[in-house]
Length: 98
Image (cartoon, rainbow, N blue to C red):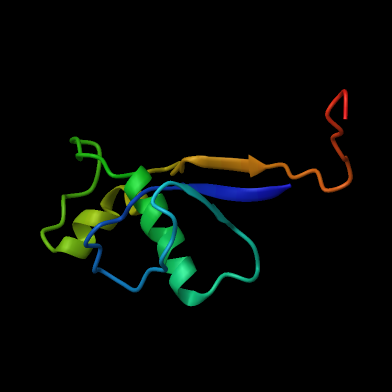
C-alpha cells in the first residue's frame, strides 16, 4: 500500500520548484521524494485547500504566494485528493482458456 496524491496538469506554476509529472495520475508519497517532488506535493495540497475567505478567517493576503497558501495555512483540517494505492505483486492472473 502506498499513500498517493492525485495529480493534475500544473501549467505555469512558478512560486517554487516542482517536479515534472504525468498530467493526470498519482504522486507516491514516500521517503524518497526529491525536493522538487516535495514542492509538487505541497503545491497540490495547497491547491486542494484553495478557497475564498469568510469573516471567520484571517485577512486575505495580497501577495501571490500568500494567496496560494492561504487556505492551507488557515483551514483547521486541510485535505487533499488522494488516498492509498494497493499493488498486488504476488498474485498472477491467468486468463481462462489459455
